[in-house]
Length: 407
Image 1 (tube, rainbow, N blue to C red):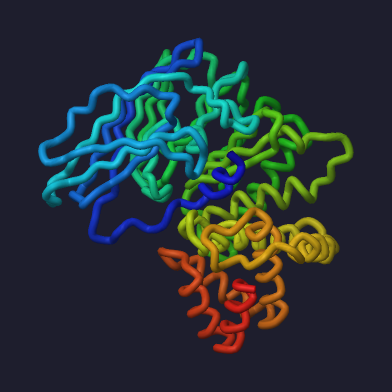
Image 2 (cartoon, rainbow, N blue to C red):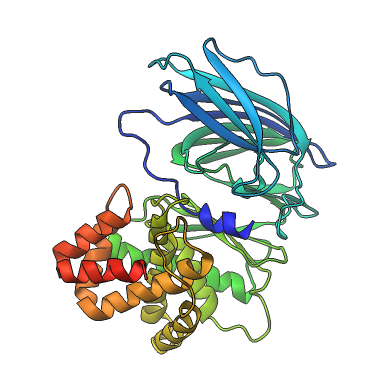
C-alpha cells in the first residue's frame, strides 16, 4: 500500500493533446456494514485499439453490456498491489465516436491490503486509489474527469473531496472538471474547517498544535512556492485524519495528512512544516509517469523544494542535518534511474540529495532557474530536465547529473 501511495502522487502524465480525456460517471452506495454497490460508466472520447482497467478482486462484477465491436477478457493481476482483476477491452474498429464502458459491481469496501488505511473506520471513510475501489487505468496514469453521486453517507459525515462538492441528506455529489488519476474522498465525523491562503483545511480539532502547524506551513509553503512558480493552480483541500499510520498523499488540489505518528510529545515544528511543504509542492511537481524512471521528478523534486522552504522559513541549520541523514541512507540506495520506478529510498533520500548537490555545483540562482523552467513544462521527463540543465549550466553539468542518476 505504501509503495502504491508514493507511486500515485503523480497526476499520471499529460493526456494526448488531440484527445479529450476519459470521463467517469459514478453512482455508488455504501451500506452501514461496509458493502459497496457501484455503477461506473467510463466514456472514452476516442476509440483505441485496446484499453485495460484494474479493479479489486473483492468485488463481484455484474454482466457487461459491451458496445458493438468491443470484446473483453479478464485475468487476475498482482501489480501494483495484490488481489486485482484486470479487464482488457479490445476495439475492432477504432473510431472518433465516444465509447462507453459500464462496470456494475458490488463487494466489501474494506480490504486486507490496507496497511493501516482502512477505507471504512468508526469515524468514517477515507477512500483513495490504493483501495482499488473503482476501475483504475491499468497503466496507473489514466487521467479523467468525473461526476459522482455517492449515497449511504450519514448526515454527520463531513465530506472532503476534489472539485465541486455538494452534500445531500444521504450522500454527496462531486463534479470534477480537472484531471486526476484518482477519485479520493474523506467523509468523517467531527471535521472542522479552517481557511488560509492557498489551503482549505479540515481537522477534528483545529486547536491542536499540530493542526496549527499544518495550516501555518501549508499557507507559508503556498506563498513561498508561488514566489518561484507563479500562482497556485488551485486552492488545496487538506484533510487531517486520524489513523495509526503517518502516511500522507497528494492529488490535484487535494492532500491528506495524518495525526498518527506526528502528534507526539516533544515534536518540533520543523518536521510537520517540512512535511506539509512537501505535499503542497506537489501542486507543481506531479507530472512524471509513476511507473517510470522519471518518477523522481515527482517525489525527489517535491522533497528538495520542501527542504528549501524549511531552510528559508523554519531553521536554516537543519539543512546540514538533512543532507547528512540523506547521505547515510543514499550510500547503499543504488541508482535512481535505469530500472523502472525508483524505490522509496531512491525517491526520498538519494534523489533530493542529488538535487542538493547539483545546486552546490551550479549555484542557487542557476538551480532556481532550472526548477522554475521545469515546473512550467506540461510533461516532466528526465530528458526535458537535462535539456534545461544543459541550457542553463552547460553540457558537462547535465552529463554528470545524468551519470549520478544512473550510478
